Image (cartoon, rainbow, N blue to C red):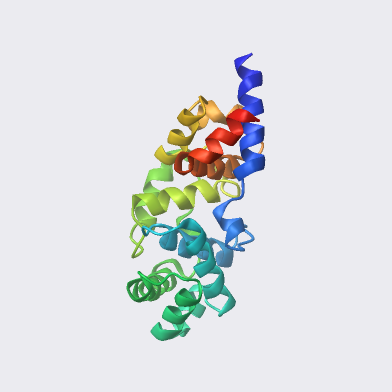
Length: 213
């Protein structure tokens, strides 16, 4: 009965809130340099104390303005970055973030040859090392590296099943297993489930809707 109940809850939850942040930002995630860099930019934006929908909108504006690669980000002026962030309503942190994105782009180009695959973990026991490498980028701390791992595990399977504290909090609110391994048997698409659980942790109305389904 518990298994059937968990499957029902997870199906309802993913239907209700299973859009990943990469999808919301218009990133077609793949194991390729540009979308991986775009996910790092999005993780930077999501790391600030700002609504996730605003961070996604700001990411879309940056990418639409040609800043979807580290070279494109670096070629843009600081004001170009500020303006794109402003169009996405990412205003309270726009100037500081514009600076961080420029510094981060330079680092990715100089240290990783513009390709985050150079620091891909490759095996589950190297995920913590990867997260530490990612956290060298300005604006990405533990929360940002967790966001990146939640989203990228669909194309970097050695990271899966990745569930951080935010995922666990959402799972507990719905009476579900709260670890990656506990959730994995119920997940056809773990990044979507992880995103849905994070939203559930932040929005009691989602929990109420799913419980009522």
